[in-house]
Image (cartoon, rainbow, N blue to C red; front, side, top):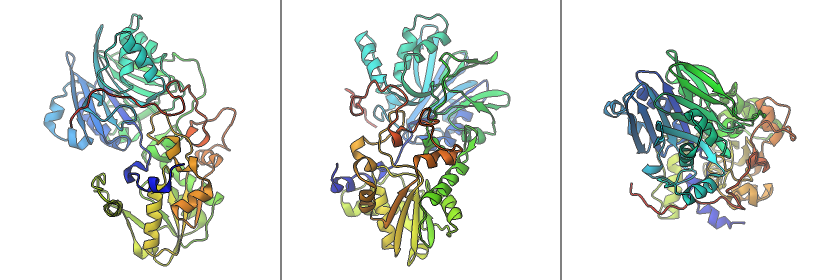
Amino acid sequence: MHAVDDMMDSDFDGDTLHEECGVFGIFGHPDAAAVTALGLHALQHRGQEAVGIVSYDGAKFHAEKGLGLVGDNFSDAAVIARLPGAAAIGHVRYATTGETALRNVQPLFAELHGGGFAVAHNGNLTNALTLRRQLVQEGAICQSTSDTEVILHLVARSRRGRFIDRFIDALQRLEGAYSFVGLTNKKLIGARDPLGIRPLVLGQLDGRYILASETCALDIIGARFVRDIENGEVVVISEEGIESIKPFPDQPMRPCIFEYIYFARPDSIVHGRNVYEVRKRMGEQLAREAPASADVVVPVPDSGVPAAIGYAQACNIPYELGIIRNHYVGRTFIQPTQSVREIGVRMKHSANRGVVAGRRIVLVDDSIVRGTTSVKIVQMMRDAGATEVHFRIASPPIAHPDYYGIDTPERDKLLAATHSLEEMRAYIGADSLAFLSVDGIYRAVGYEGRDTARPQFTDHCFTGDYPTPLTDISGEAPRQLSMLAEAG
């Protein structure tokens, strides 16, 4: 167990969940790169470290990549002008494998036998290091530290004839979670892992097909949602239309439950369910399972807002914004002393004293990871005059790390893995603490409960039930070491 002092010194920004990335692709549209940039704007919440777009103009591939946000890199018309062509794919990144360096920014591109191939990936391959080691031993030269590069090498080395068969040949060697969008000189390709852990949807704009991580990326460009790409499905989009290939044996879908809890934007539709409504139902279910005697329900912004609304409505307790978030503050990177670190927290979240003072409050958040942020939020409420602080979490305790594209700490740094419920309550400093049950999550999504024989979702962070082999993992998550440091 880590000492409380060690956990208190953890970076405030590290006490949250991060998705690996979002992907977008469009084929046959005259403004492909501009449309892709807009789609990536809508997917910005899925990754803020880097962004890239690759286009194809019928003769050449063109690439633009940068560290930072979509708006920082693709708001200039001159940049879009450097991406001509009617086909493009794009990617926003939050790194879970490989450091943040320009060589890791996707889409990755390679010249293969038969032409160029660009690929972007959402997820994490749990056998990427094993495959990479084999490839290097056989003479491969790796240019990045991203697990996505493995797919390029596997496609290049496949002995199959047609490109799509080589791509499928490569997919069949992968373990873990993935949604791929790929671009050749003739095709836009989408692929989803056999369990459908990571999301991918199909849309249409002006009769042209689009692939995207979420429906919100379709909404921003006025595109029509067609359907979800199915688990284990490969789609090939070309001038001839769209082809669906099912190269894997049929098995039940197990999408990631965290899309509903945290990752997807509230206005997205995930597998037919409105994310905002699901999060409200999680709050309602939490109120039934863990009511509190209180005067006001306060969300921890922004992730706790829909659940807090549902909780307040189910309990018939007023909902108020007792914490105001400053949306114009980036990372609190200047933290030389504890006192300045505390100021950094207040820059991001401020107590609304008029709502909090003299009241018993229920704080509602979506999850607890390390717990360091929760400690500071509870103390902020007490400093603002709250007489009681009851913490309610609209998901079960996160007791196991993720290896499928969510950036979670190792197990010994997860508060729920090292503390009992009462120890967590004492550490956070709340008067009471309760989590939504695992069955409660499933009820909020529309099931009677979790089917233990055939679970409907990938929920290993709560249950420890990992649905795929974890070839690269032996006790703890491996770390990809890089011999090359890059500036910038």
